[in-house]
Image 1 (cartoon, rainbow, N blue to C red):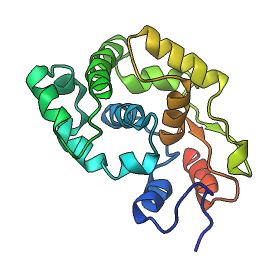
Image 2: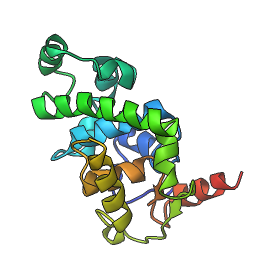
Image 3: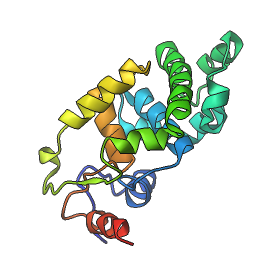
Amino acid sequence: MKEVCSWVDSDNSLCLSYHNEQWGVPVHDDTTLFEMITLEGAQAGLSWITILKRRDSYKAAFDCFAPSIVAGYKEDKIKTLLNDPGIIRNRMKILSTINNAAAFLKVQEEFGSFSSYLWEFVNDKPIVNYYKTFDEIPAKTELSDTISRNMKKRGFTFFGTTICYAFMQATGIVNDHQTSCFRHKEIVESYTK
């Protein structure tokens, strides 16, 4: 079996496939970026696997992560979501998702796409880190501070610097696969194709 990052539970097929197929791969699709903002915010205070197990339920509950639909949710939809056992039934996190959908739409309007706005922070080039151990990987960086601050100014909530850094890792803004992990090299090579 190929070596993977030490945080991965190799016995958990969901965790393993997420790591092997998605984590750290550069994302430019706005719907997927909104999905990851939503899921990373939902994860606050919980483990990532808790959210990963509910990912399909989130997709169904939040209209396939269409920000134009989510931004228009009213009280009856909020009540439905609060009774949905497939998601984290936290009123603040649900309201944050609705709020973030509206903020997301404003960014799209200003920049043409959320992806254009986001990738501008790194001049459209992923940051490649070369960490050998999981302990070397930071929980936040100056860049996550900057992006988080900017997004908060634009009205986003549940998007502090630690959540922002996890989002950056998930969406390939940074490649934080450990150097011993087979995905580190594969992803770097994909930039040059």
